[in-house]
Amino acid sequence: MIHFHVIAGLVLRHIYLYTRNAIRLVELIFWPLVDLMVWGFLTVFLRENTTGDFPHFISFLIGAMIFWDVLFRAQQGLAISFLEDVWTKNLLNIFVAPVRPLEYVSATAIVGLLRVGVTLVVLTVVAWVAYAFKLWDFHFLLLPFFGNLLLFGWSLGMVSVALILRWGQAAESLAWAVPFLFQPISAVFYPVTVLPVWLQPLALSLPSTHVFEGMRAVLKDGSIPTFHLLAATGLNLVFLSLAAWYFAFTLRQARQRGLLAKLATQ
Amino acid sequence: MGGDIILEVENLRKEFGDTVAVEDLSFHLRRGEILGLLGVNGAGKSTTMNMLLSLTEQTSGSIRIFSMPMPKERIAILQRCNFSSAYAALPSNLLVHQNLRIFGMIYRVRNLEARITELLELFEISHLRNRVAGRLSSGEGTRMNLCKALLNAPELLMLDEPTASLDPDIADKVRKALRRVQKETNVGILYTSHNMRDIEEVCDRVLFIHEGRVVAEGTPAQIVRDSHHGSLEEIFIELARSGKKEANR
Image 1 (cartoon, rainbow over the protein chains, first blue to last red):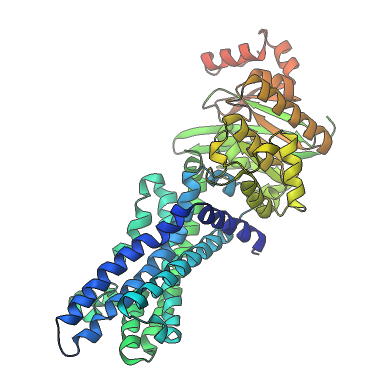
Image 2: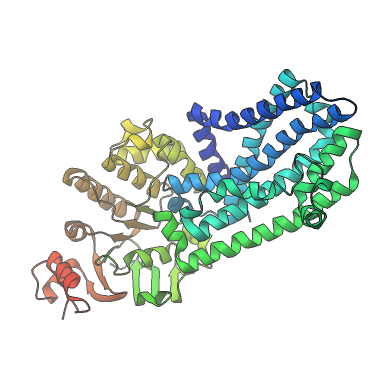
């Protein structure tokens, strides 16, 4: 049974953190804005220097960049929230309080959703003002893919936390690295057909690949590609189950080996 | 001390690979009692405390808190317990009252604002309510942690070196406040410290742990009387220097 007061308390901790310190809010939008500017100007350059149908495809870059950030922020919501508790030596207080692992993960997932929300609003507005890219023209059609990215981000977040639990603060850099392990084969900025043939089955086994393929289809045709949506959702259920199992397994191992106490008190 | 038993540990053992951190530990704690857990560094105190808090799972043996098995009934038990340690902190980037409000919500404390005010007054840190936790002195930080530890009016309180790094004046105030809370609420307290004055002044009963086993047990006065030493501190030093030698032989 989940207790919502526990989740509310854990989420409140992060809301206080972000609203107390302007630097924290800047951190939420600084890197995404830098990315958007780089990809945005590249798009402008290519659009002005190419002919035919090419410019239409080029505008996918901005959509892909925004979508990639959704995945990254969702994963970071879990991983960085956990690390915040490690860095501030608060982990001990949390894990000796009546907090279930599911409540902890749910709270950090909500924090991830809030982070995504703030970043998405800023990027959408800037993409519209600076590059005339209107994400909301497709919003209802993109929404299911957006949801799937959140789910995959949460799966990667749980795996990141599990790795930190297992390897301690030495694995801290994985909190940032894990999503990028999947980026080259997720067909974020290019179609999956660009990948070598032998790599394509691996790419298509990731929900993120179907999301980005689906996003391109929505932006191109204005309709939802059912296959990619169903594939992304089905694969997400598998990845989410595996990530939850791995997190629970690692947490149990961490309790047995004393790693949780070590991480909480180091 | 005639209260009912709220913590019962039987034949507790913890192995980390080839290392035996706790060998065969059995003890109990009654409601309203303050039990001191003493031992040199590496004696097994922290591992024991971690097992009681379900941070670490025991290899064998049983822990029953409020007659419920730990860690099986972890959530139900932890709802009625609390903990404070010199080695754990509340988020340093939040205000004192924000930290307390967060944990008040987690423990579902009723009339939370009034409870926070009451505890800040008890530990004489009301004026720090809106101070960033990271800017507190170590004494102020310890008292904030104790406020958190008492938020849910716990029936069992586990304190790991609560007066470490406090000056004698603040340490005295903390001891008196804890004694007052214990008398008013009948809370059972498990207390670890390296400060023998703390132990003598606060604890009703003491367990000396050495190499994962209990080597002496009784009131501070009894332990001193039964040993050939003049004080708890001398026993402590003897244990630290003599390996497995029993303190009250």
